[in-house]
Image (spheres, rainbow, N blue to C red):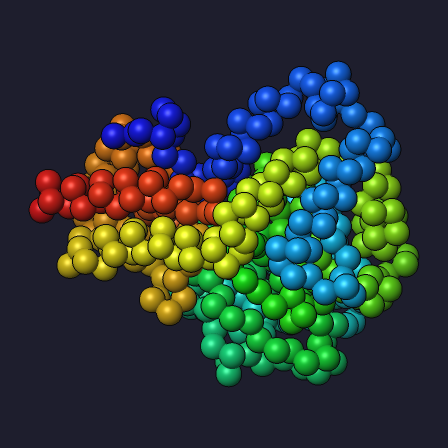
Length: 365
């Protein structure tokens, strides 16, 4: 069944698929990068050759996301999970309130970290309905004096995604976009800070991107460790310490691949087409497959569903593995099935999985 150069049908939730052309270029350049006689992993991060790689990645990200001039792009480490702490360390003082919109496990973890520094509260939550949907704008209840509002743009475990984002006025809006950044166009101006681990849509694990408005940088708490200040990294072009140079190189190559595809609008259309293949298999199954997310909140990045019969679900997952589909088990906390259709997952992979779903239903009804 698998004809993609013997590569797996990779639906892993993260680290996830990378474009084959990017991997092949990295393979070619691995030992001798641009005639230096060294791998990019061996270059000094202070060298002119690496600096070009670094700045090129920043410039491409600004171009693809149409990032305004009053924002900085930072390359950090520690993943989205460190940002759960870094955000309140910088912006939530003891006794201050910050609003968290609860849509899944990752917003729960961010909320838990914020409790160590100030007084966070729930702006809205869909936990009671097993996180099947994104809250509507008119359900959001927050205070004009809040330090910030935090949301998770896409929920990998439950398969829900924000279609659009609220306008919070003078209250800074902060977003964890680890699992859907660059999958569709966004208005960066709505956010004071957005951050994303690279390992789903941008590149390999080890790099975290933060896009932060310059006036927000200046508001950071000065009485925290140097490495945990956004200002430290902004002042040093993310070169205060040795950055994950290979990861940033790969990120830049993924961004070049996106640009070559036609940019974020072309990629967004491609992602919609990919997801539709699998959602159609669910919706046309007459209940054989049952999607978790409500239709208006469905994610284009993480498609979560169950097979209506528990024994058949086990058989489905076992046969999917035999056919070369990797990573289709649901998250260990909820079970079920999940297909993560991130940017680099090919259309052909989604088509093959959709066909497998249809064939499995036909053979097991």
